[in-house]
Image (cartoon, rainbow, N blue to C red; front, side, top):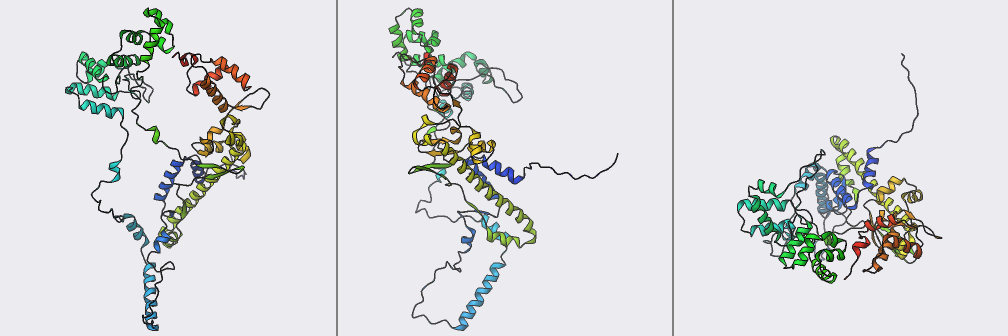
Length: 504
């Protein structure tokens, strides 16, 4: 046992807080970056944005070079030397008083100061704009409104509220158990359980549920698709043949197996066709027109723009809405004179400098990666999705001299506006599909080719997956397996050939 001292040289990667901040900012989306900037502006006093310039605000007293000089009237008496000297002494005393201002108290008072009321032209009694905003009505609100108009008893009202609280996104009554955080699954419930909790007889609960199913939209609160369609069919006065198809042959109806339905019900196929036409008019999702979020109001703001200027494409960042940050030098110099605040302000100053540098580095990196994508996918930007080339993260990483993980962070939740439309940067990274006697094609282009083939097919005789494989190989020279066509078709939300068949 002995004690020794040794010198050793080694290299290791140390994740400093500044590096961690730069990496975190790199993978933030546009909205998350704006929120992060706002938080830093609130927490760091030496940071300022372009909308509020403390230096310009401090010059509002009219004593600096920006002040307006009034023309002297010819009738005004000339200023004597004594008056000029007195004025100069008065100005010096005012400047000395300004230098002795308690800046901490000034900033505190400035923060607490209420904004001056603006003139509203005689409309001071109007409510604020927040109270005039509207939103789309949800299914729960619509059913609660109908519940208030009903003549239910107190116990029946409690049961109806339990039913409304257990509806899924499609408007069906979902009483299946859920899985908890610890892995346990709650038991499935039934109408009897809801009736017991609402202290109502189970038979009365069925009557209340049936009445709720006839509310608007008709078929809501149903326990299955079959019950939903039957409630609508009975309400609209459908005949016995259509009701029998809903009760006994919903699975054959899904498969378009009309011959089996005709044989079982002992009617002609033409009668089945006419009955199915009426059944297809029913709503399979009662909550279709009631959504919590309106899809039409959801908009994506691009991070970068790709514009065509003559024969070349230019990439520019979208800084609209993102506040430009700078160091409030006047306030920083003033606060650094205080020995007690010097250490605090020094730390905030370093944090501000690192934040500004990280945001600028993020902007440059996104533009650099986008320029590389434009260079490699030039045919896509000129001619469309069919000419998208296979590309992986490594291709861009090697071109820009960065790691693949950095490219992945840059392209996540970042959107680019192009002449072909709005795309996420991740969209341009595709695997390759082999083609006969030609260069490989991107998987996204294959998906669009499959979609185009299905759109052009004969609806009464849709193509099978194997026929699509043969058509791709013969027309485009694309070698692809049948299971790959099925996978891409499911990713595009396209049904199989048996379910796409339309006889009328």
